[in-house]
Image (tube, rainbow, N blue to C red; front, side):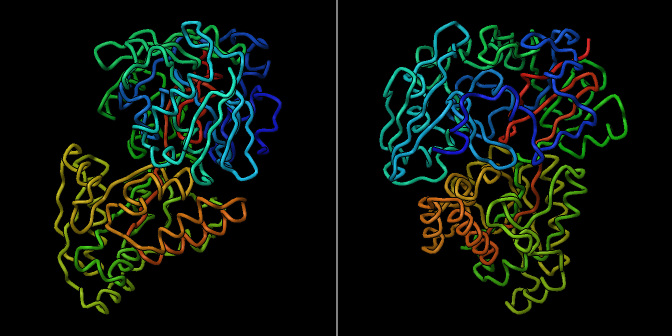
Length: 521
């Protein structure tokens, strides 16, 4: 049984707050369970305002609750629970709807014990059949489908017990269990929730108006006693980051999310607002390389790209410092990753030009494609400049997001492309199994290498922490050497909120966790 699984029950606070790996940037924040913070033990905080207004960049879609993973709007976590959470510092599973679990000796069977005090918003008790329904549905359409497809059987072995049987050992199964929510088997029909989503989370789904306003109400039956603190939460969807900032500054919004870090500079030094980054959760911005396109079939040309890009300048100018420069797609604290690997490719345009000369490719004209958005346009501008300084000729093409996404998924982009994705923030194995740009066997870069597939197979079979660390190190070396995926930055999930709002936290996957959040009246 895992260390986390030995916990006798769910901690009262424990992992609700951000750990050192995703530190709360607001100075002087106190736990809502601290008597000095104005909370009555087991009750509602006396000094807290009854409502919270959130402005976010995307709206929830009831048809997508099982279909999507890390890009699901962050506030969906307020309505739906998951089987496990991930510790932000270690990414190890911790109890949530599942209180404990135990592996069989051959690690092909996992038995999950479920909480017995959980009800859906309509009063219906959570049962093992709901979990089975949710996992089976996710194996058909979830973003983490490649992980869940390794399940040979999912069954309710008791009213509050689910047994998962694997076809092959899968060391990162908990990544999938943390991504996918548990939905109500009675109301989630044919891949779609009813108009009112019935979950087990801290807030109930009251109404969804005009496709851009979600009204939530406090779940009086929530299994965490005395939580949440708010009576009502309203989530409004806006597509303009400037509109979100204006709402926050005018007091029409109390908390905003999905705003580019550079746009938050206007709040710097203003004591009326707090900007908070969840460093354990990020979207990785990268320069993708189609190795089937000349001159990128030459390894020296691909490595020239690594030295050409100025990652530190990208972090400062595109993300306003709310990001981290790295040569690797996964976090620097990933077991097995060394500091040398993280900083392997420092900005060195002369070295890049020398590699191009060696390959006879100096002056080669290459296409560079990206989505036509403020962030990607800025990324492309800097990458284009860096590549030209190294000796490339660059032809830029900006496409609507609806046009570029199918090309990325189908691998039909020629030359170079700038995009982002988030699965790598969980584990290297999940990244190379689920993420299209890195997926073993079928990826946007057209890399089909038995050595890459062998590393994936070894990672799946790794039976202990040391074995996982060893293969993570080798996998990092492989990506650094082959250079078909050029990491530009880890852009952190960032929120801004009024100083009257306290104790905001996020999960390791970037989902908002507002069970302890309060707003001064």
